[in-house]
Amino acid sequence: MIGHTFIEVFQNKVAELEKKFRQIKFLGQGTIYPDRIESAQPSKFASKIKSHHNVTLPEKMKLKLIEPLKDFYKDEVRQLGKELRIPDQILNRHPFPGPGLAIRILGEITEERLKILREADYIFIEELKRSGYYDKTWQAFAALIPVKAVGVMGDARTYEYLISLRAVTSVDAMTADWARLPDELLERISARIMNEVRGVNRVLYDISQKPPATIEYE
Amino acid sequence: MIGHTFIEVFQNKVAELEKKFRQIKFLGQGTIYPDRIESAQPSKFASKIKSHHNVTLPEKMKLKLIEPLKDFYKDEVRQLGKELRIPDQILNRHPFPGPGLAIRILGEITEERLKILREADYIFIEELKRSGYYDKTWQAFAALIPVKAVGVMGDARTYEYLISLRAVTSVDAMTADWARLPDELLERISARIMNEVRGVNRVLYDISQKPPATIEYE
Image (cartoon, rainbow over all chains, first blue to last red; front, top):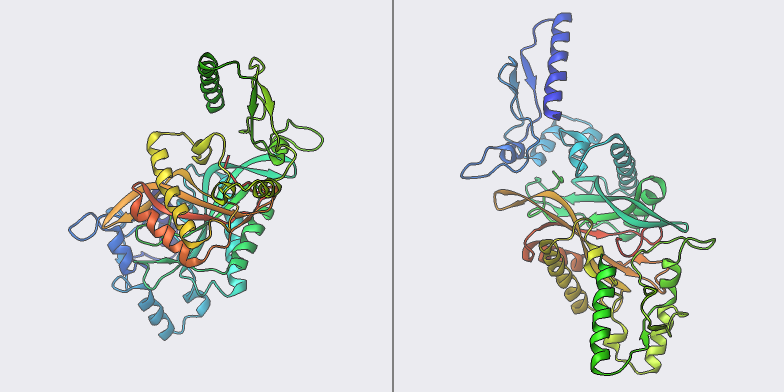
């Protein structure tokens, strides 16, 4: 659904721009090597692991695809970026999935859940940046687990969502290890999320290596 | 359902024993003070937080309830036990909930899920004992989160369950903090669970304090 909407919005925008200016012939896309491996159709070498990469466009789109980075791993892409003097803030930004937060909600996607997830993710990333750990991790994000567990607020019983925090270190994203964040930092993040985000009463830290887990949840 | 089955089995056993021996008049139960507070009906002081304590028996059961520990906190109960020379292995055993693993599966309870949970919990507790952390924690257990997340096994994509590990330190269970386990220990436990337990491809460590979270999940 998200992929189709993406293409639809994209096509409308192309039509709009072509009316204003001239025919658009090319589409530049930041595909890198691991995207191609992980999105490839089952073969002798790799079966389909990620389902959400839009590596190819629909046939009827007449744009020619340009993917100058498709043969490089991410660390190589960053080296190239450094040569080109791209600012660190852009160059070192964590990867973000094409379908956005939809793949970080394990179940039905609702506005309420998106709001909760955004708030939790904001606190997580803010604390990582503040403590200097953002740049020491390959990728970090919060995921919402739509299973309600019991909690206690004042004297009352509450049923709210679980938030899982994922932070990994990696060189090329083909393998990844969970980031060893300091206990005090995890403690602060967990307390802030439970205190500040309405709808969350339990926070978990993902301690799974890839493989067998993946970095993203879907 | 579990509560009712418990009473049913209990009543049958009482009848069986009474036929063999003589009338049974008393039931000794290990209720302690926090059980009474947390299972109490909503009042000025505390609303119902835990739902699974069987503090009272059905009216029609004629047994007189004896709860010699009902006014003590757990640390006091253990002091009493020490005075009575009860072996450490029994005295320091972690609490285990009345309804068993049912409250540690967040959703439908099936045989497959119980099997997975038992295996994961066994590894967790075994590693805690081996490393000396079992005695340093108040309670530790695995919980099964019946939400399937993507993983990768060899070249294939897998959808399997999440396991959450909960280990807390506490004095009286009224408040609790997540145990600061060493990274190497968490790493070993997580790797063993993912490698040895079929059906699990992601392991999370619970970093929630009580309050607002509870120790158990239900």
